Length: 107
Image (tube, rainbow, N blue to C red):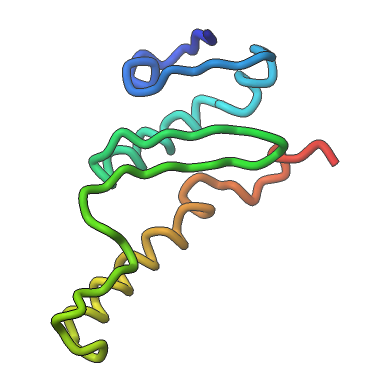
């Protein structure tokens, strides 16, 4: 178990690592705030795993994303709007979590 400085983050996430120094290096206070914001945005108990220089994000949601209602035409505005909203939310993750910053790889 890794203990971090942010009590809100510690209530929301259980952090386990084989290297506590690296865990603290990756889970900066800014990253902790970003993850808490994403958790609030999706109103879900998201899970993350940092493995082999990759971040794996699991978002448990009650509805099936990217599966349109087959009872509506594919070109229906509501179907398209829902799909677009879901796509934008997922594509926004790298920017929202600042994953393009070089700290994510040592290579």
